[in-house]
Length: 81
Image (cartoon, rainbow, N blue to C red; front, side, top):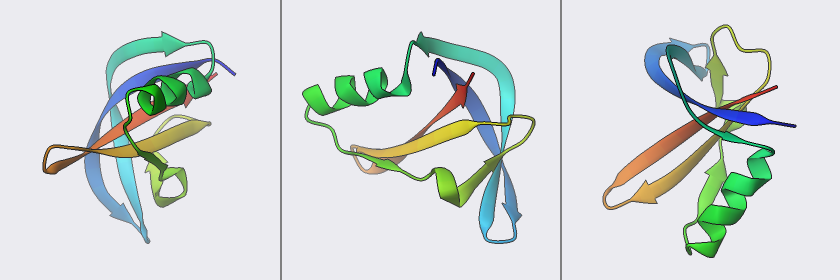
């Protein structure tokens, strides 16, 4: 399943889930989201799947991962096509 990285902004919460709105910009394309995960694991970075904790407006299938970078938590959103 091909995956395209999306840039999003938070629009608050809907129930217990955070609503993310795509900004229109798209990042890297991956033949499969596992390719991105493998790259992160080879770089000794831990990623956590948080797809069940968010909603992405206008996207039917998505995957969201969090990783720590310095003192921040970085969230990466993928549109699955």
